[in-house]
Amino acid sequence: MNKEIGVTKIAQILNDKGILTPTKYKQSQGINFKNQGKNIDYWCESTVSKILKNEVYIGNLVQGYNKKVSYKSKKMVNQPKSEWIIVENTHEPIITKEQFYKVQEIFKSKTRRCKNGEVHIFANKLVCLDCGTKLYKCKNDRGYIYFSCKGSKKLYGTCTPHSIGYENLKNLVTEKIKEKILAFYDFDNISDDLFVSNDNLNKAKLLENKKETLSKDMESINKAIKELYLNKVNGKVPEDVFEDLNYSFLFDKSIKQKELTKVENDLSNLKEKELNSKFIKEQKEKIINHFKDFKELNYDIVNSFIDYIEIGEKDKKTNSQDVVIHWNF
Image 1 (cartoon, one colour):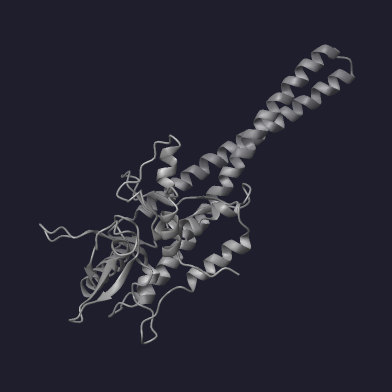
Image 2 (image 1 turned 45 degrees about the vertical axis):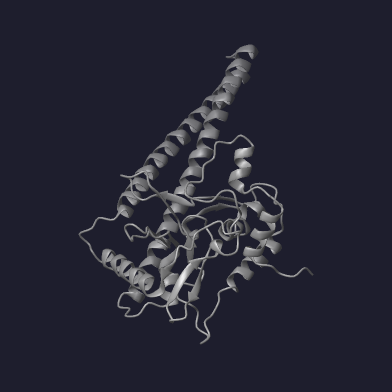
């Protein structure tokens, strides 16, 4: 059995072999594809990680990675996996499910622990805003703890440090999580979830009405076909007229059936989406209620609220630094 290697080593191997990154490959094929803010010339940990976690390679269609932050805005935000729409076995897989899920188990077992045996509070959560590589924990001679981009050290020095102090980040994340908890209990603040729910309700009513109309149309067509056949048997309708009318009725029935099938599928998907949304809301409420009075930030809190955090390079002129938190909900 081959020795297990990590995503950093895989990225290095791909870079050594000159394999095009996904963005560069698409561009080489004439596809007008842009990847804003990322280093598209070199493979990094996050790119390899995303590929290894992508279910498309086991034959599943995955949609809903992101959505608009509001019906008022065009800005898109990443969605937690629980809100993705996954349709299994839509195409031929290129790896087995056994191989895929074995890799997922390896990812789960890779969370590093500190010397005291506890999981680091930002373990596997910090990502470079520019190159997508993970940030790793450092400590200088004076005991100052900070995080720095691995891309600035390992992948041919293709990135800058993007350093951020541990305490500074901890204080910032603590503040943002508390703001999120307070916002949840602010009943004067109308949530966008309300608009989404109402929108889905309106869509469901329209689909139900259309389904009812199409079902009645199908009944009428079936009744007309039956009457036409009886009139033919009784000699009231000539054979050639029967053939023309019967073909016309059957054609209309086929069209209506396709429309009805689509409406039923759309209605089923909408109901499933609403059930998933309800489940997410329940999970969200459960997590927030559990941690609402927390005093000290820890790994469980960070992992429950946050998918990952992008760290930008510090602006030396303004001393400002972008920290983008991607929430689980």
